Structure formats: structure tokens, C-alpha cells
Image (cartoon, rainbow over all chains, first blue to last red; front, side, top):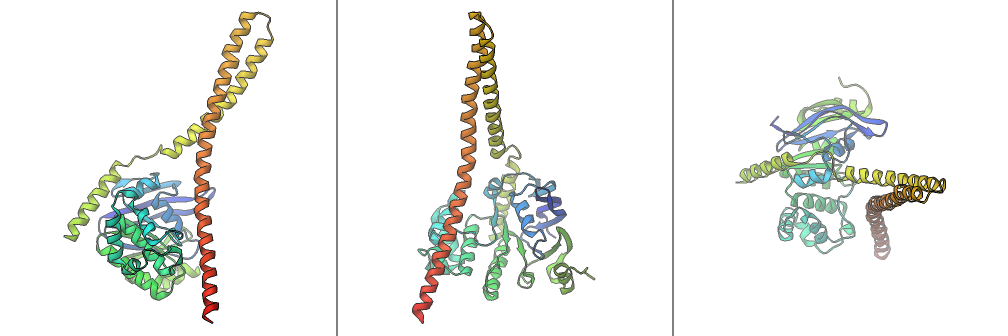
Length: 237
Length: 126
């Protein structure tokens, strides 16, 4: 693995008295696509919340760019370049595409630059710039959330269930874009419930079950038996 | 060229992360001021009542003025300060919650409109 830009060390986190993540450790190298896989309730989204600073861990360390940033404010991390695309839709459905892109100018980028970057990567958004974002298809809405995230030139991109509610063909298209984003040097941490598509573009995979790492390794080496073990509850052979 | 640009971005990112202030964020400060407000409010009421009782327990005018000055007046000042802090910091939290709720309601409203439009389109199409 390349030098890690993001690392979780022995993270324990949860909600109130309920601990969801038990001693979770993994790392994301620079320019890598790392995927967190696991069934419902495995702790994937909780892990994303810890990384983005939304949830303070009970113990353990969150290391970003070599510094322990455990307990840092989510807005400070976002401003520095750790960008999250939340589960569902990370857009404002009652604003137009262009107005949604205006929202990305909070980090100080000019609207013209934000639009240029968004439309060059996703030409379809350019055709729909004056359309209400909520009236676009699910795939286009995810394109917009990706475009808005990329407009802020993130160093680390966190994607939570990009495929939710989308057709497999659209999901494959979106993950092609994710791979190309990683080729540009952006480190990507993807959370996914559906393993097949994302394993094709990921460098490294971490399989979670019950808040702990069940298996980890190069994405190409994560076999069906490991996934079946995590998803169906049998232990991997 | 591409990789140079990204090296710069990673360097800037590392620098910004290095300069991040940890702990004691705005949220913590708000909570502390809210608690201080509540404590000042309660302490003020207690002082004012005590001052009143002490003043009424003596017939000496000098003592009465002293009890009122140290008890009731300081108590009232604390009540005013505490109330101001409590309103300021509890309303700020409420307003934030209200904003999130507004965004959420807008989303579900848009969803309903889009669903209704689709239904109309389908019916017109047939």
C-alpha cells in the first residue's frame, strides 16, 4: 500500500450505550480506492461518520495526512479537503443544478470554475443546468452530488452507498467516474452493500461484519466465500 | 502535470490538516455558555430570595440595604445575565434544528411533487 493518507486505528464508536464499531482499523493510501463492504448493520456508515468527524469515537485514533485528528470538527475537515457524499442524495432537490453548484463555492472557488469542472466531467448536467435537481433521474442526481464534491477539489472523497436505488448500468457508469477521480490522485473511501461492481474499480477491500474487520486485502483477491461469510454469517474458510 | 497539481493539493491538504484546531470547538463553547446561563439563573434566584429574607429579618436600615445590595440586586443581575445566555444559546441550537427540519421537509415535498408529476405523465401517456 502507498503511504496512507487516512487511517483508522482501533476505533470504537457507537450511539449512546450501543457500541457499533469494535476495534476497527484500516488505512487508505494516496490515490487509492478502498471499499468497505458488509451487510446491513455491519457498521459501514458509522465508520464513514467517524472519518468525516460527524461521530466522535469512544476510543482509538483517526489519522489524516499523518496527523491525529480524532475529535476534529466535521466542517473543519470538510474545508481542509475531506469531502463526504452521504447516503441517499447529497443534493438540494428543490434547487436547480446550477444553484446546487453554487453551494460548492463555500470553500472559496469561483462559480465559473466549479461549473466548468462539473460540466466537463458530466456533460449531461450541462444540458440540465436550469432543471430542478429533484426532478432528475437518480443517476443524474448522484452525478450532481459527485460533481459538487469534486468542484471543491477534495483530497479524500468519502462515498456512502453510491449505488442506492440505482440501476446496475448507472452504478457501473458512476464507478467508472470514481476510478477516474482516483486516477487524478484523489483518495476514495467507498461504502457499499453491493460488492460486485465496486470490487472492479477498488484497489483494496475491507469486509466488515458486526463492527469488526472480517477480511481485508486487494480487491481482486476478495473471493465469494469471504463475502458469503460476512453477508450470510458463516465464517470464511 | 496532473501529478504535480495533485502533489500541490496533497501538500496544501496536509498543511491545512496540520493547522486544524482540535477540541474545544464552537459546539463545546456553546454548551458551556448554556450551562453557565442556567447556573447564573438559578444562583440569581436563590440570592435574591435569600437577600429578601435576610432584609426582612432585621429592622436595622443599614443592614437591610446591605442585604438587598449583596443579595437581591446581585441576584437580579445574575438572573438577567443567566436568562440572556440561556435564551441566546438554546435558541441558536433550536434554530439550527429548525433549519435542518426545513430542508428535510422541502425534500419530501419535492419528492411528492415529482411523484405526482410522474403519475400525471403516465396517465396522459396512456
